[in-house]
Length: 242
Image (cartoon, rainbow, N blue to C red; front, side, top):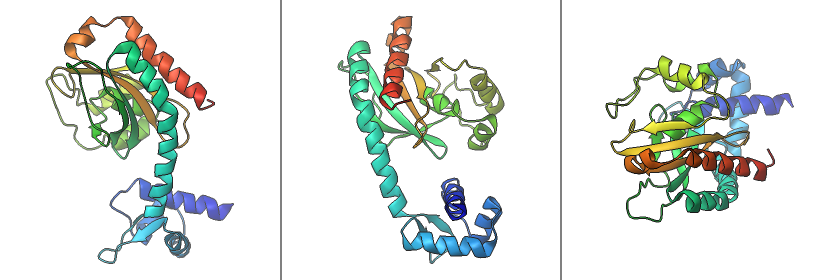
């Protein structure tokens, strides 16, 4: 069991450092002896879970781990898709499912709005955390310390409405009641708004569900839209056995 926990600690350290880590830095990050790190990394590399770059002394996550992770995400997407379609029909707006990857929220599934005047992103699109509704929903599932680490670099001001003070943003998120939604009112893109809710308790990732709207449709919406978003999120959590 100790070997498994040590291997997991190494994989988590590499996940937090996308550019890779040297054996010495892995030892520092995990608190393990360098010789132990070298032995476990060798075993993980043999299975394809990590890879070493001959041009640099760095160790990174390997393709086999990405393949397994992709399979897990596909299962979550398949579970969420029918509920997203129902929500799409109820609100007539674009529905996004995102996952926290590194310091961005990445769109992994989308159901487009049926009308011409609609907001559309694309699957695979990375979104900033500090000024999108889904990004804030992801941050709400983290501790204040984890949020600070993800928002450590200077935050870009995308529009005049963007809040780029990390401390104020984190304080606001931490003070938000657990069952509330998060909003983006033209903070990321002029004329575009969104509301989002975190999908809580899925162990394979930090997921969020969001409704994308034009500013005109956002201003015209009633509280029923927020209610329907939460109902959809709750249905997904029940389907996941949470």
